[in-house]
Each structure stands twice: as structure tokens, then as C-alpha cells.
Amino acid sequence: MLITTIILIGTIIWVYILSVLKRAKLSAFYFITGSVGLFLILMALSRPYGIWLFSTIVTRGIGLFGSLSGMFTAFYRENLIEIQNTHDTILMFVDYECSGIIETTAFWSLIAFYPVYSRKERTIIGVAGALWIYAANILRLFVVATIVFFNGNKIFFLAHSVLGRLFFYILVIALYYNVFTRAHIIKNFTGKLIYKGDEK
Image (cartoon, rainbow, N blue to C red; front, side, top):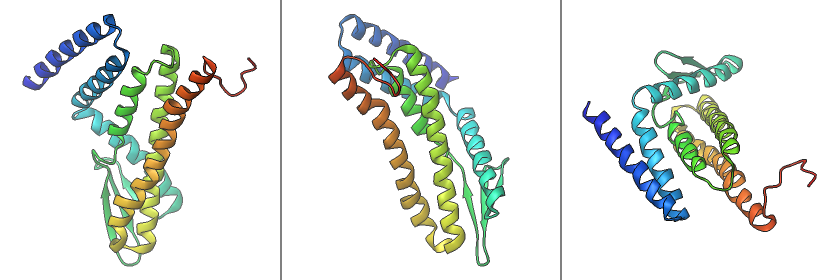
């Protein structure tokens, strides 16, 4: 009850600050305050059901790869991946960190207040971006599971904390570049966004 009250009061204050910044036409502060505030609100609201939902969806996605490859088994109720080779049995939990909820929420928060796109474009890009991050996360876990399957438990830390994260964040950076940096550069030079196949 206390947490709900804090979130509600924080949301009201956040909306009021946004209205002041918008009236003052302080675009940069409006974007920063809007994105950070929305991220904090969404993360607060995601506990515990949002985290459970993201973890379950990711576990089911990676479980499909496990069934096809035969290298690991996914247990959906526990959000658990069991990697078993001839020498070791390694258990990998799809928890808060591995669910992709932080990265997805951060992306949604930024795109919601990014002024380059229209409201319709932000909605489409928000959905597409979430699917991209989901696919990147599934591929990351598959890479980790594959490395561990062939090399055993001794390589788990390197595979999960270094190689897997590096692979995942390269894909996320590519998304951010195309959605934010590239779009902004194109609009600055042309005065409008140019899409592939646009004849004008």
C-alpha cells in the first residue's frame, strides 16, 4: 500500500513537472525528465508481475531453441534452463537481470519522449524495438548455453558475464543507433525522415 501511494504521488509530481517544462518550451529538460520519470515508474510497476512475465516469455523462447538443438532443457514454471553435457549439469535462471525488462523499459521510456518521430511512429518503433531486444536476448542466452554445453561449467562466467553480454549489447547498440542517432542525423540534414523506398 505504501509503495503504491509513493508511486502515485511520484507520478503526479512527474506529470506536473512535465507540464511546466512543456509550457516553458524547455525541450531538452522535457525529454530527460520524461524519459527518466517514465523509466522509474514502469520499473516500479513491473514488480513482481512484469518481471515474471518477461522472464517467462524469454524462457519459452530459449526453450524452443533448446528443443531444436537438444543441448539444454527449459523448465517454464521455474524459469530455469538446464544445460547438461557429458561432464557437467549447469543450471541457469532467467531472472530479473536476464529477462530483458530493464533494456526494454529503457527503450520505451526514451522513444516515448523522442521528438523526431510522430506518435504513430513511436508506437510502431516501440513494439518493433521490444521485439528486437527480445530476439537479441534469446540469441544471447543461446550463445551462452552453446558455449557452456561444449566447454563445461568452468567457462560459465566468461560466457554469461562477458561474451553473452557483449553480444547482446552490440545488438542493442545497433538498435539505438538506427532509431535515435541515425534518424536524428537524417532529419537534421534533410528536414524530414527518409525511409527505405521513399521516392520523395
